[in-house]
Length: 222
Image (cartoon, rainbow, N blue to C red):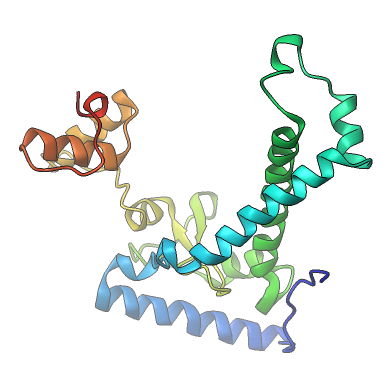
């Protein structure tokens, strides 16, 4: 089946788009006031699409293996880009084709995800959102165009919301912090210096507290 990009059956005029965005921003101002900044960072559980992702992964493996073995543009490309001598026995063509397919999928995903922003408001969605938003829904402060960032509260087709850089950091729980933060600031410095993820730091703290940590090897614990 040939893929066709989803298109909206509704065509909105300029005034309707402006009204929609105003109501949208007001909705999230109220949500943030009621529920906090977490209302702007809602994500579906990772396992919700596990079956779909398994199918996609299996399809990538089988299709890339087939394309590497039969005459065509993939096989031609593999032949035109020979591996260095010591790599030839280490990287089989089916794996090279799989890597190329992953990269093609990444580019396709980026294009299709960008297209989701245009579903409701057309090709100037990002410009319209920046133009309509006057205040950051997180900090409540006026938006500075040079420091405005677009944030998706939910990746389900709804447009992005312009927020300040400081507001965006708060949404993602990446505050730059202040001198009054006795715990967050040292942790951020440790994270930056050791190049550790927050999950690793959390695991390390639990180990120091002698709490049980599942799936932790001796090397990681050290």
